[in-house]
Image (cartoon, rainbow, N blue to C red; front, side, top):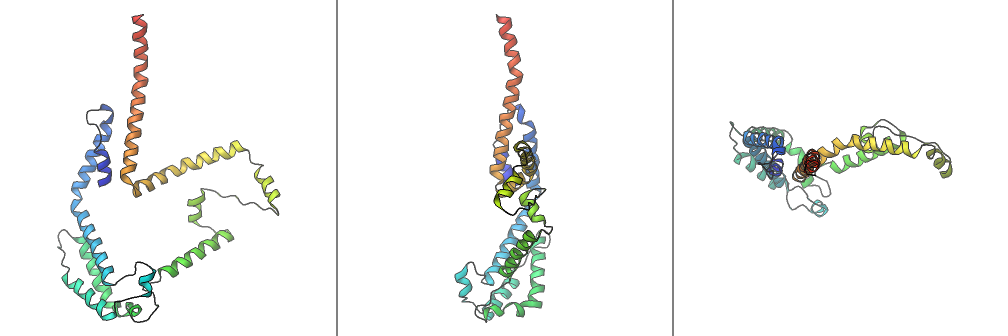
Length: 242
């Protein structure tokens, strides 16, 4: 939201064609002001998560996975010290309170079962890589077996075509049956259907650049519409002058 507000702050307030964007800018500023306390609470909660990861000496690369300087007692002391020293305010820091309560509960119940990786050499701290491997194998198995999967539909569109051919020339002859005009028309429909998803993805990853591009397109479109309205007036003036 801050990036969107920054992109809308570059508007020309004197230009009449930007009245709608100015209203949107005021609304975004209002939302930012209203939720500033909540955003600050979430920011501090994220910092608390990073502190928890620091207490666990979570590995950031392969080298750290092979060499762990921390031990069970050191991790226990650092974690308990972090829990005791964290005192969020109950009135405005609800996210931090929920995170701290969840951390206390899980640490009391499962702390002794989570620290074996600091005593057994080569034991990873989690099973994320194993689950990632299983996920890749599952997607590959679905792809070759033809089972239903939403992931492939997101990547390849709303429909898939399966060809049965014994050789490459036979496969080429089947593909050439489809007229190029029909293929291009469906490719354009697919690209048009994917535009909303691509827009939200770009807005999520780079909101400032996305908003700036939208503002530039709006300004160019407004200028083109204004030129279209002014062109008949200029022609009529030229005729009266002659």
